[in-house]
Image 1 (spheres, rainbow, N blue to C red):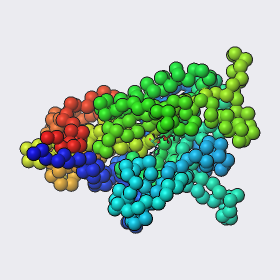
Image 2 (cartoon, rainbow, N blue to C red):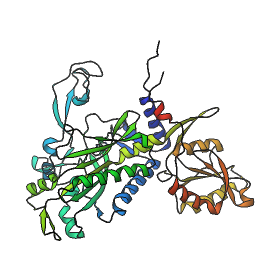
Image 3 (tube, helix red, strand yellow):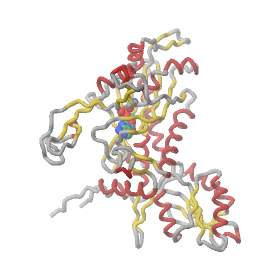
Image 4 (cartoon, rainbow, N blue to C red):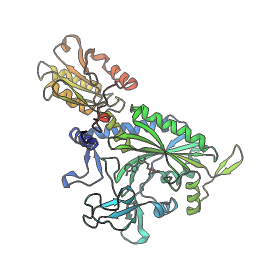
Length: 458
Ligand code: GAP
């Protein structure tokens, strides 16, 4: 008789969550008070990866395109913005509560009409607005209502005229922004996949109406290339087009890049054809004419917008899931984060083999020398084997060990994270070696332990 298949996805996520805490990638917010659910703090290693992701995105979108400029708009905007955008009226999820256990669910995520936790009866469906409301100033009345932005996009649209007038950019051009967004999600979860406070990396590209199909294809390709540059396995990425009933109110067409997370294929980011919806609505609600005058063709129009909208935290989760591997060695299981050196939080660790014979002092000199250019880590605590394992879990591509030979020929052993092979390298060549690995890293073909063990096969 066939054994029942066991879904190992939750187990894999639990292992990743526990590694993230152990090594200082991510912590639950306000943990000492019992935790603030669906809010996460980036630890010393996590913030380095997140900053690397953001810098790479900024480079790919702003630095490498002469017709894209940056922006950093305020989180709290005029409340009319959210009326114009459609969020006050339409940014709802259908919600039900269990009458027995009081748990709350998104109705559209349920398979049955009873509580999935306890089988209890559910309330009628109610619409729940996802925006966080607050009040500006000391009086809490309807005139002082404000919202924490649920997306960064609107900060770009309301500044369209400011950017055109101050930079003299000509259509087609784009405005890019990275920043926090807030959604009072009914059912957050899957670690940092769906949280209530998160960061978006959005670019709005303003184009002449009728050229949208061309620019959709163009930006879809660019966004795909970005994930390739992060070193993500291609077979864990795919495109998913929104069907007519899934399209947001503003979109003519939309495509998501999805990643195969341990909990299944899920959205990483989207590319949306928003037509002239946004600038038309802001013209209507603000009374300001947001049309654009094309001097070359003596033509006035409201630009169409192609939006690329990525979640920074989802990209972080993608990178972490893709890097996590368990390798069976002779006497133990090695956990290794195969992060590309481009995004690894620490590029190399400097380790004296023992705490005597001048090795710590020499190791500290090497550490200080490399630190001027790359994030490196000094560690003299515990056996060398244990120190290697810690660095494997941190995703550090190289361990540089100072031993007795170092004082004789100015070399260290360099242990490669992926192959665990060791070679001797001149101290003077180390920076070049790290620089090369950041530019040219190729992930080795390894057993795909995460994916192949999502579900036990018979
Ligand atoms: N401006 C368009 C927009 O905001 P969206 O599909 O609602 O579109 C874009 O969000 C991206 O923001 C998503 O693909 C995802 O990466 C990220 N995102 C959205 N909600 C999130 C949440 N609750 N937690 C983490 N990331 C989220």
